[in-house]
Image 1 (spheres, rainbow, N blue to C red):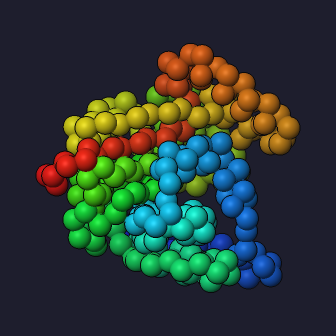
Image 2: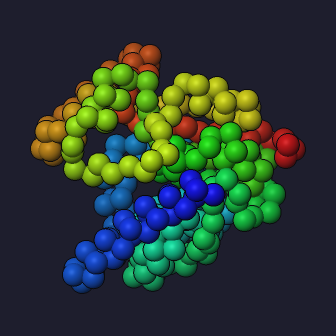
Amino acid sequence: MERLRSERAFHDRQAEQRARDLSRRPGAYCFSDEAYLDHESWIAAGLASLGPVQGRDVLDLGCGHGMAAVVLARRGARVRALDLSSGYLREASARAAANGVALDLVCGDGHNLPFADASFDLVWGNAVLHHLEVVTAARELFRVLRPGGRAVLCEPWGENAVLAWARQSWSYPGKARTADERALRLAHVRLLRSIFPRVDVHGFQLLGMLGRVVGSGRVRASLERLDRILLNRMPRLQRWCRYVTLVLHKDPGHAVS
């Protein structure tokens, strides 16, 4: 309960600051799909891993500002957007209204999802699992997914010791962390594989992570192009990346455990 209170308070503070900033920018809630898909290199690839979403029941786990939920709804998904923070749910509601889509917004906790078994075809989450107790959250995801469903989770990765030191020691734009969050590691993947029969791992931002420091759009784009070449040719380098997408597959016919 203390962890939940701490996480909720942190994200409510973030949402309150965002609400003040957005109130000074008329039209700020409106956005194109590309504005979300292109803001980090793993987003478009992660959403593509969901496959077709038209007419499917999709959970946006930890929806935050609601941009992913809006993109999914614009693509024809029936979206339930869950977040622990009521402040972020207010932003997601305003964003949905501004972009002309319908979302079912739910306040809840990833450790105890307020949904029936086999409620969803697909689950999306960006930077959520590393805030949670991994086994408890993964069991809940398995429970609410339908047979043959999948969850795609984009998460900070913690196998690179130099990056771990930099995260701890450096200041950079967007750095803000809760007391309990931890970048995922190979040990967490092994835990996920004890629950899901198949877990695919894809790394992003090997050289591209330097874009957090250089700031130049052109340099960042060049680094990310190099990443695609290197990671395609030498997949083992994914271990040292900044972020991963985890694709958790529930087999067709697999019963809820």
